Image (cartoon, rainbow, N blue to C red; front, top):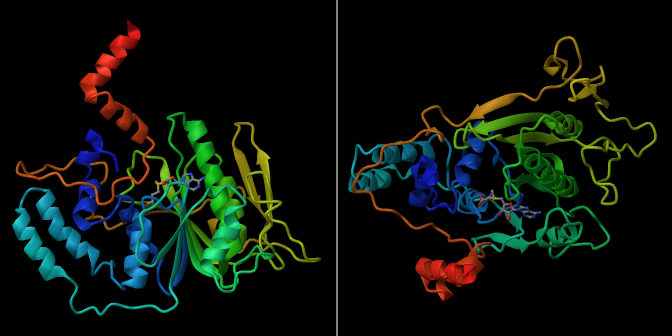
Length: 383
Ligand code: SAM
């Protein structure tokens, strides 16, 4: 979580620090759960691109500690906190309210056989009940690492699938954004395909997959591919994700690969590949063809055997993923600026970055005697 002036005005940035989340992204997952009951019946999860770990925190608190964050839980707390953030109540009063609002009547729902594996390029500080791996999700060597972390006792190095599959794979992967839209969208889509290929190795039939997407013009290609292996594919925009951002989340439910489908590491899925159907006579539930239109857009056509004819655009067969805004309308608007009380204290981040890319720059600045020293260094260099 940075400290730019935009971040400081953002209600979710502050709320995350007040409620003990490592990043404001926690609210995105909570709001997606609110809409799709994501964690219902879930015990085994893989969290991809997980650092600094707010999504893993949500998983740990829901699956291991049995906390509730549904409408009954976190929204009431949020309402109390909102009064504070809007400057109508003082901090003391809010603390009392928060205590009162602890959901006392709801007994924690403890789940058995919980396994959470979190993977990121960056190191991640430990979290209760979460196995963390430092690895690149785009690299094939990550698959055996992930499979071993999921089933340390029954792991078979010859197999590319999990011996006990998982209920849910989530991915919040994002590259360091360059500001060059096409490049950012391309790199992000590569992360998404990598996440999907990992998910195909570990998901159980009926499992769910949630991943960040940047809504570029070719996003339909992805939806069409996803629609072949999942019963339901929808796009979610949580209120905590800024409307001004092209970010959204694809929420896929009911994993149902075509008969005989085996994930292949030699031929991973990507924008230019089709889901293979290795068994004779085995036919994917829905066939897709792609063509580049005159206007440069890629058009995806689903076969007329599609079960989802209602979803198909009139006059053609292009399938449009339903788009859902999620998070209650009373939740904060992440694009709005909220008035802050003047006696407000600035809180430190819950988990400072473990290995920030700017660490070396800070060390150099310190060695040079701070910002003034840095100016002197630069002056000397220029001289
Ligand atoms: N969901 C996280 C949370 O709640 O704290 C925030 C994720 S952050 C937006 C995006 C993460 O993607 C970064 O930590 C980055 O290191 C990770 N990432 C980017 N490329 C990756 C890759 N190839 N393999 C693994 N992680 C990657």
